[in-house]
Length: 442
Ligand SMILES: [Zn+2]
Ligand SMILES: [Zn+2]
Image (cartoon, rainbow, N blue to C red; front, side, top):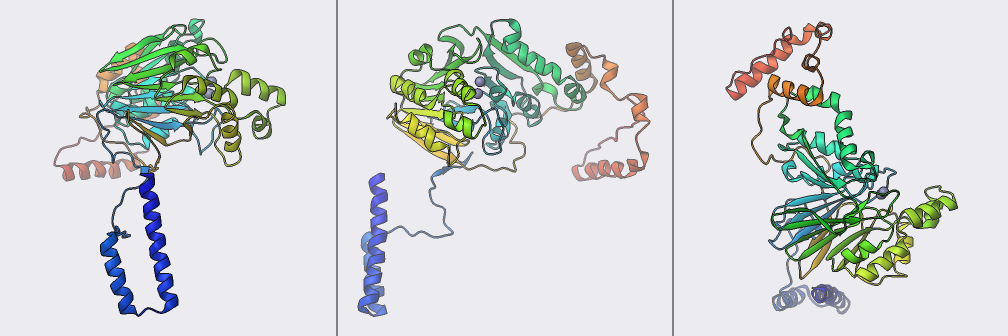
């Protein structure tokens, strides 16, 4: 492949050189045309036309079938807790040739990245959270509520670690998130297809060492402890069809990662902003920069040591702001301790992994996306039945799940006529009677 590229470049160079020489020595146009034709016939150069499609070195979502033995990993967040438009916080999507998809961490801003891939939300229903920092699960609510609104017709399934006390575990955090959105959910019950507005929480022991936490359809996901901030964080491995994906979430270099991440085809591990840049760009004091940059997180030099030990087919460094003036620091420091294959991750980097090859590209996505196709048929809103069920589940009295007389009386009736017109228009266009809701009735 590399040789082929060089050959094409050389042919271009030869042909340019020939026409220059022809210009200098004054070969007649007819002669030049003849020799050009015979040269073309000999070399059979591809005709590159500006109106013909040709292979590109980028990934356009939903234009490539995944091979049966192929794994595709897409970075949907590679940044930091401090938000920025250029990089969302931690999130990696794993897609497998058997059709399964898994999300590892769902950091702030990552839901937008996932939506731009236009994957039906029924297939984005499995999220594995490595630890409960906002930059690793800050977009969970958007996947829960926005994901249901974008067509998920089943519960969102979440896996995450326990903590040293129940309040420091995933179950507590996610249950409280659901409670925080009580008003939101109460207003939707009865007026939308409510099947997607449900959560399945799977909390597992954070101290378990290489324990299986998921096993289905040939996919095994294991968890082991990580060292970061407090007790509780974990790292994951996903094994399928002889391929091994490893995701560290956040961690100080630890013995479990060195042991259980061995033989990874793709190993993703944090590599934090270099200490001098924490001072210069993040405005940390030197004391704080040293502590956060080397003790709470993994410094680039330490990332390199870890990767030299586990020797993955590709090492992926993330969790730093990848700018023109900070990337060299991270790269150079990693390279003091690691010489192997390396990706410095940024959002929308894509790895296609098979046993024979790892192809690395950037995805080019649409930003103005709407809901992707539905995986199944939508159901009509459940009305009072859904309201009664939600009232039971949440403890909110069913009467509160509709407007009070006080609010109903505040409706400005002058718009009634034009809104009835919209119903009439829909009824005529679709050949079906849509009854206008009478505002007087609850
Ligand atoms: Zn963290
Ligand atoms: Zn983090």
